[in-house]
Image (cartoon, rainbow, N blue to C red; front, side):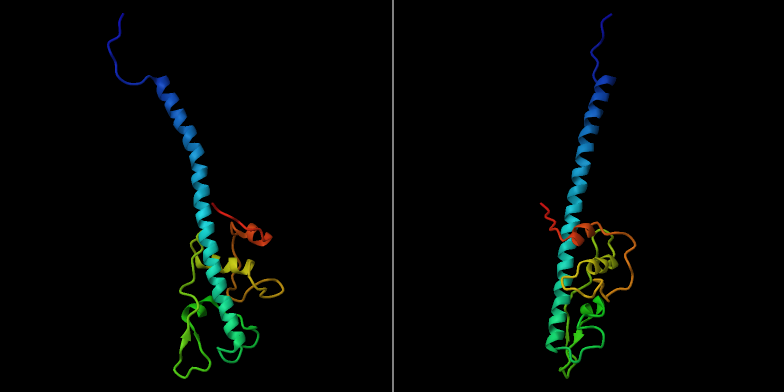
Length: 161
């Protein structure tokens, strides 16, 4: 008996094609996740650098006496990140001029919250804030470990491609 000309694929051909596609996608997904993680790490590094620069600039201005007398117990460190965003009043200014050192509190790209950025500052200050390296900018402890915390604490430099 002769077959008529049939168009389409056999079941074996379909299974082979789907298996090949499954293998290719299983290799591509981890690569895509690694790329997204590297982008988030880069964004986190930029945000932390901005906050460090703002804090360091505040410390330098305070040490020079630009903000007037130093508050007791602060050692010229900012009390909150919000104060850097809102602006700090210049001590010798008669017309209440403010110096804004930070545009906004950046969001943590891993948790999309601003509290995670504060937790990251607590773990890696450029200048030692205290004996236990904590900062007075936030009182909440992070609920989970930050993905970059291992790299940050060990001091190794993370390079993304």
